[in-house]
Image (cartoon, rainbow, N blue to C red; front, side, top):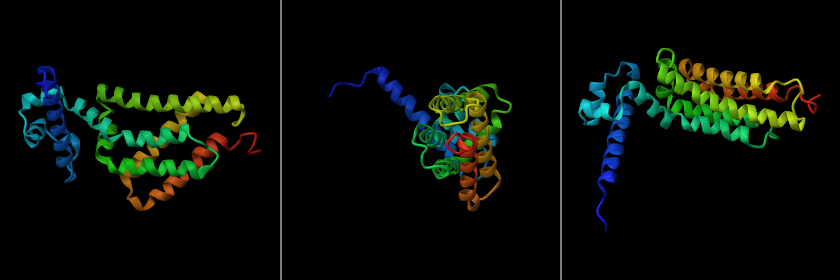
Length: 210
């Protein structure tokens, strides 16, 4: 077996430290402690690394939160993307299924996504990251709406840019506020209601609907 190169060893060490830090944060918030109240020293101690080592990998807690969000928010994004790229012939039920998966993903990573929303209100780096994720989804939604309008399956007056932004923020805010304030018993109803609202917004006044 050939010897491991120095660069590879450094990269593997970096990845291992990052993994330990991310796992430490997950353990620390398991008791309900908000991410914003975790000091770097406590995170470093829980990860078994020096404070200076922590800062070599994460310049600050904002960068750490972004790394955590990359892990925890992808499933929610993927569920939404799957519906917009899929077959819409299933009607509101298909949207509701996608929304239900998004709610499940949000709850599974609730503390990360709530912290992301909170910190983005005052941290420019986190705000730019958060807005970037939403912008990517809005762009995907707009492309699908453009295709639907060219195909004549939505009303000619539907404006793709405005509608895409409206749908993105409606879904994001509804799921975020629901998961922040309500228990899971209402998840199915929220998924059905949001699914119906999305469907009607896009297809409710389409030529076929009339």
